[in-house]
Length: 151
Image 1 (cartoon, rainbow, N blue to C red):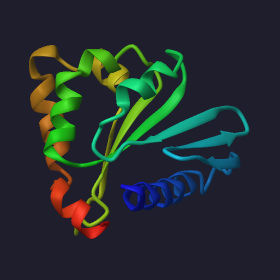
Image 2 (cartoon, rainbow, N blue to C red; image 1 turned 45 degrees about the vertical axis):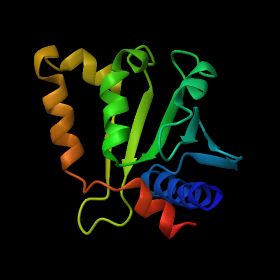
Image 3 (cartoon, helix red, strand yellow; image 1 turned 120 degrees about the vertical axis):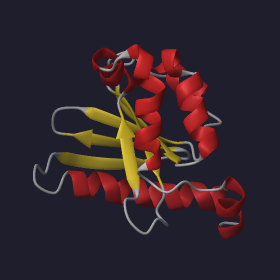
């Protein structure tokens, strides 16, 4: 699992730097075991590296409702099910995003959802269908294949 975390750590740092390419607000990047804290000129953003959403509950406990944070995970069916099943656990965090990644996809490699914002604008009756559509925009990964590549 260490290699998977290291891979996601490198991917996340590159992702954050690319997002910052025009605004240039990153002041410092502090990688840790399973997270990365990026200090911007005006805020702190914490990225939790949780490839298969096994630690999100503990990660959320460390956050304030207004913390700028992201949970970076692979775009797997199991991770998608957790997002849908635990949706109400996520909507109280106003700046929490999930970054679903498939770095091996041929086309689109990432999709991002802010549960709090999405919950405020989405029709509750079509929530799952809308999330499913977003999930399907990026090729899904199989956990076993990811673990084989990084074992």
